[in-house]
Length: 311
Length: 82
Image 1: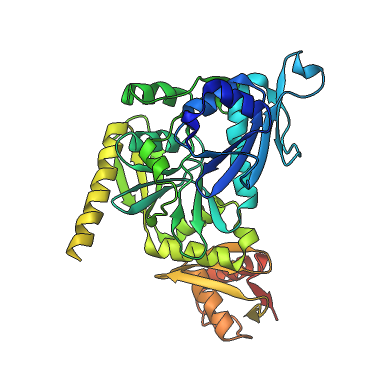
Image 2: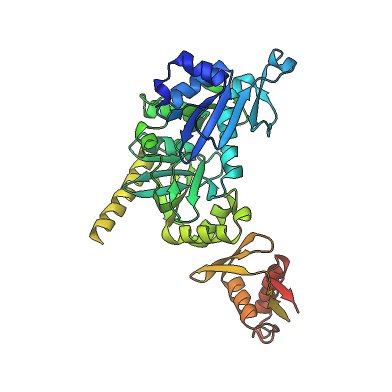
């Protein structure tokens, strides 16, 4: 059963009670919240995701977002994120409840899913090859990801790329894409049909909104993808798109710096990274206009598919 | 005299004349430029080499560059002084 098949009132009732069981990529979640805006965003952004009875299914992560039990429930109201009853973060203003849930879920994965090399990177796929997009915050990665997935690329992930330590393939985690500040209007203008939830203002990242993942990406969320490219994107104000090869050593260093668990995985993490870099083409990519960026990526995917057919 | 630390094990992956090396003792990964890679591999393969053995004593500039690189390799724990 999909979450959108749950009547809204029933979703709110379950969410406020024992919680709702959701499958996102390789992980199952039990989410509990009494906050109406959380129910609203979940209904609108996770409609295509599988739900089951919370009483019958095992969940990897048990999380909740709720107001605290003290005065801050009413006075300048706040919200807490809780994982297995533990609150790993300081409370945030109530209006940031949904972004806090998303960030909390990212933390659950990056802090616990050590069967993967978890990289702070986005992933998209086309024609059977995946592009891993790695960049510091503010470099336009999520905007580029949104543009690509609204142009036919499959969303593998926005924030966390999961690399299987055994196969080296990327496991999808196609949760909503977080857009910040100017990117929100840009994506609305790029694709007027795209669904973004209600904006949350004054978060640590400014104003944020989440883009609903494409239906097809969610449908294929259990289908891993072979890495094809590692791309280091950067948005610049003016300029032609430029895709330039980047050295594998530097790519390796940058990738390990953006991985959450290389130290934890130790030698295995090094091996997984080495094999990933070995099989992928590495590029620096600079862009100003989203449509031009998409065209460059499409060309890359088409060239790879043609080369594969010839070989 | 300088030699590469024997334990714990290290993993090295090179592409062309550069490499990355994983140090299991610190769980750190280091990026080795061509000279650093050459010196690291030489010291690993020939423990106990001196700078004279390394053949860099004749040119002051190369000697200084080598000394600086060896110091950096020792600093990050990839080499040990004998």
